Length: 345
Image (cartoon, rainbow, N blue to C red):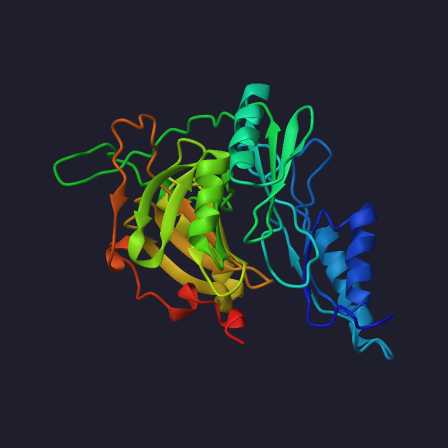
């Protein structure tokens, strides 16, 4: 055993059994702090059992306490499902020297889409690697690998809205709100957007808009930020000016503001240090938000009620400024949100 991973953190999904159990144990032996994730479901996806994750966590803790293994990493168990209700591969975790977005996948309908994107990128002087059903390219400023691939569209099933009462409006009577008794763990429906830092945000914006074909929904000219989309969601990508390339946050859609509060509160009961900012409502995109911190230091956003753009002729791009851009209401903005502490050194 060595301590070459000492101080590093790893999340291993499905780590309660089989090969991934062995991976979790090996990472801990090398000094990593391990989140042992396993909801303990049956092969058909039903049920829930904390036992497998707890057992691996206890094995790692026991090994760390044994003589001669003082450098072994620590472990915590996690029982949440990392799948999203919308389906599709949403997120892959990889080892890297520092936290960053390494690759971004974008789906298109047909070969004609691939051809148009390749032509635009080549006009920008960006080298493109073509395949039968995909193209691969590297964003020149950030070094993020972009994979544009033909894929089936993922259609989200519609979810009924909860009945809510308001002044002069009664949608629910003689019954308590289900939101007050719902103890179901928050489950993200999809990965909605990512935010990254770039040393030249304008050049990165040109790559995604003029090259890949993203549309700009809104912008904050004073700081060089554009909210960009490749779907009907208000934004799927934001590139902000930064002294270094880094992943600022990933954003995960949940059902409503109650599910945001339920998910964040559950995490913070055990890990209050994971709180970053929230609850609030953004001015751009209009969505409710709550930001938390993952074990690697990245910010993770629960969100709901994001603006949707289905008619580009009706939607008008707005240039915003001021604090209402970030939040029309919510707690004070922490300075760490604008520039995370681990990037200042």
